[in-house]
Image 1 (tube, rainbow, N blue to C red):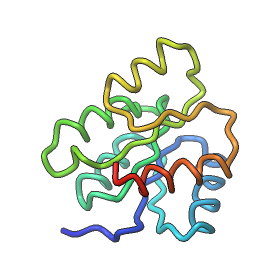
Image 2: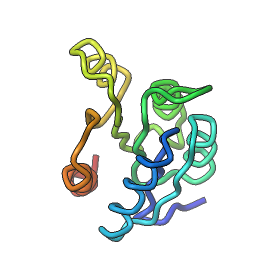
Image 3: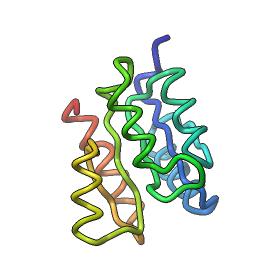
Image 4: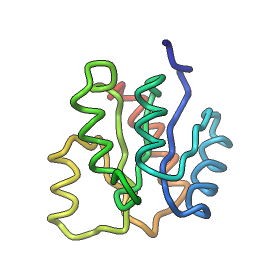
Amino acid sequence: MSADPMRVVVADDDADIRELVTFKLQQAGYEIDAVADGAQAWASISEAPPRLAVLDVMMPGLSGLDVLRKVREDERTKTVPVILLTARSRDSDVDSGFATGATDYVIKPFSPRELVHRVSSVLARGA
């Protein structure tokens, strides 16, 4: 199944953050599939691989890191760029995110404008 070239999966259990990220990315021209947890994120990503995924690290059930591991292990999704969006800001957390396969790492609180720039930059690089 071929994904829309501008489709982005956004997963965050905080509805306010999910809605803010969705709104800003839609304004930038992206089609958003917003979900509230890791299991829904993995279902969306594996069903129709998006151009990019933005995952909160701390979600109930499957964490963003769990989803990222699944994305990197699956042949159909292993090249999907993933930006982790999280309050976890220690160096060890950042290192763990990149070691797991994150394309980028954005720490909360974050600038919605900067997140849009990072999404655009990752997609422009063809990462």
